[in-house]
Image 1 (tube, rainbow, N blue to C red):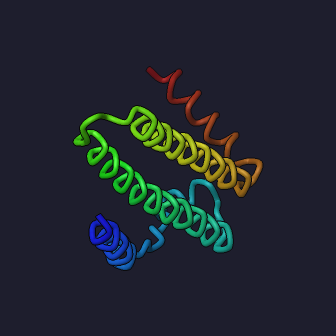
Image 2 (image 1 turned 30 degrees about the vertical axis):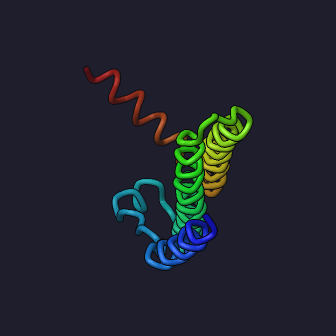
Image 3 (image 1 turned 60 degrees about the vertical axis):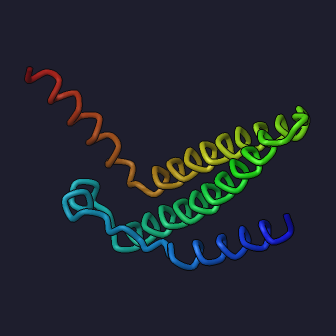
Length: 131
C-alpha cells in the first residue's frame, strides 16, 4: 500500500514535469478583429496558460481519486463513507474547475476594449439578418 502511494506521487511529479503549459498564441485574425494590443494579447495568453496549468493539476488529482475509488470498490466489505468521500471530491474538483473557467473567461472579457464586444454583437446580428 505504501509503495502504491509512493509510486503515485512519483507518477504525479513526472507527469507534471512533462506537461509544461505553453501559451497558445492568439490568432492574428482575432487580434485584428478585437483590436487587441500586445499587452492585452500577452495577458490573455497568461490567463489561458494559468487556467490550463490549474486544469492539468485537477486532472491529475482526479486520476488519483479515481484510482483510490477503484481500490475502495475492490474492498470487501465496501466502505460507503470512503467511496462517498471520493465521489464528493470528484464532484468538487469538477465544480472548482468550472468556476475557475468562468472566472478566466470574465477576466479575459474585462481586457477587451468597450467597442470589441459591441462589434461582435453587431457582426452576429448582421450575419443573422443576411440569411
